[in-house]
Each structure stands twice: as structure tokens, then as C-alpha cells.
Image (cartoon, rainbow, N blue to C red; front, top):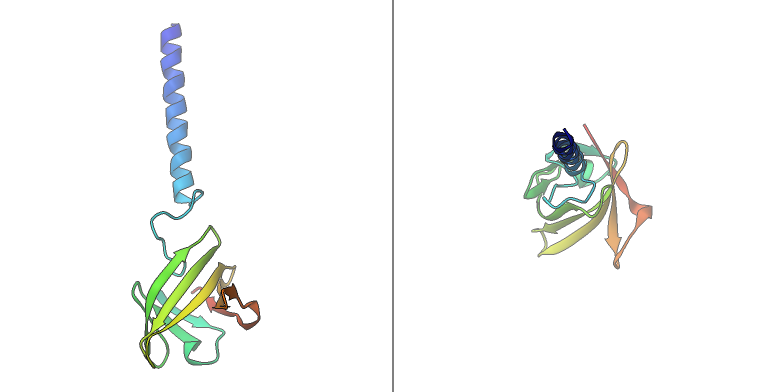
Amino acid sequence: MKNKLGIIQVLAVLIIGIMIGAFAERSHVFGYADKTPIIPNGLYKTTNTGHFKKIKISNKTVRDIEGTKTAVIDNSFKNGKQGNLVLATMKNGNRSLSYDVVVIKEGWRISPIVNGKPDYNSKFIIYAN
């Protein structure tokens, strides 16, 4: 009888461990190893009043309302709530635009990175649909 009780306990611990591990992976408790994009593909409205009033994001490009295409270099999480968005413009030579992205209730707060630090004074918000 003691042998069977030991086997049942081991099986119960294994099943509980697998369930906890699956939940932790699904909730990205240990980070985003699979390069999950911080801003998913889609058409979004923003608080920006210029060309980025509406943007369409895909895996490889970002298009503004005028149809200007920018290449996506990095669109990934740093941790559970923050990430990077790095774009390369093909207009006027090759320019790199780096943004600090924070997940908020309304969508994503985008702050340009100036001299290596996020400039929170000139932020804009991309609204989730």
C-alpha cells in the first residue's frame, strides 16, 4: 500500500508542476523568448497629429496615413510591460527611429528615445482597437 501511495504522490506533483509550468509560459512569467511583438499586427489610431495619426503595423513594415512605408527592425518586449520599437525610414536616406513602448490600459504609450533615454514629454498613444 505504501508503494502505491508514493507513486500517486509523484504523479500528482508531476501533473501540478506541468499545469503551473504551462500557466507560467502562457503568462510570459519568465520573459518573451519567442520574440512576441509588443504591438501586434493591425490598423491603429494614435494621438499623434501628423503622419502617424493612423498606422498599419505588420511584421515587417509600418505604414502611415500617407502610405509611407517604414521597416520594422525591432518590435519586442524587454519585460512584461515594456518594450522597444525600432523603425528604419527609407525616405531621405536611411534613418533609424527608436521608441520606448509601455503597455497601458488604452493601448501602448510610445516615447521616442533621444540621446539614449526615453523622452516622456513627447509621448503619444497608440489605441488598442
